[in-house]
Image (cartoon, rainbow, N blue to C red; front, side, top):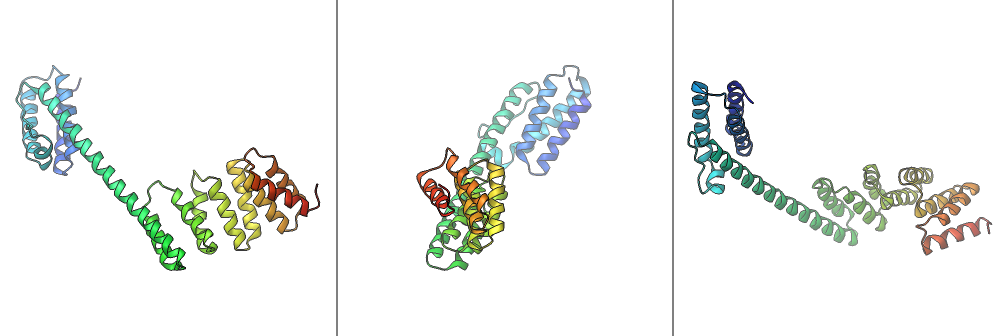
Length: 268
């Protein structure tokens, strides 16, 4: 049970939220005050009257807000002695405010994602037309709108890589593999972009890092084998070709390339 002093302090907190134009938190705080008051029968006399007067004042203030006019058409009325009924009204008011806020947030999220999609499409058109600078502007703006959609880094990097703009792709793919959910697609593209820039040792290290993060992956083993072969490290290349062939995710394309690599190096 709360004391009269504690209830008044919480009422002051609720009024503070109101004066900061935070109606939802003011209503929620007022609901908590009413619950405390109802559960504290020892609050009587002048303390009780003071609390009820303050609740009435805050109820009037909240009842005049735009939010109350929109979401509490039945009114937000408080009568002394009917705190339980008023608590239900406050709970209803808060639920409606919360639902409206969530709906608005969802609408904003959908609008943001739609804007990102449009920028990605526009960037793709510029890229297809050979207008790299304009494509990068679109991709930069799209990425600036992302919240937790980290996959956008991989998407942009791969599109640039496929357009043979590996230098432009590298910063995006570096961001992609730095995310906690970086997958095989991101790591493979990162290694391929480094290879395209003739950064063989960096590409090989990227493959090793990816394998350490993800565990064995046929395509990463294959790329690392090709890099080791290009660097003239035959034993390491053969080891990686063998690893590529051993993985459960090895498809026919990877298998064919791995077998061809072993044959080039003189292995059966």
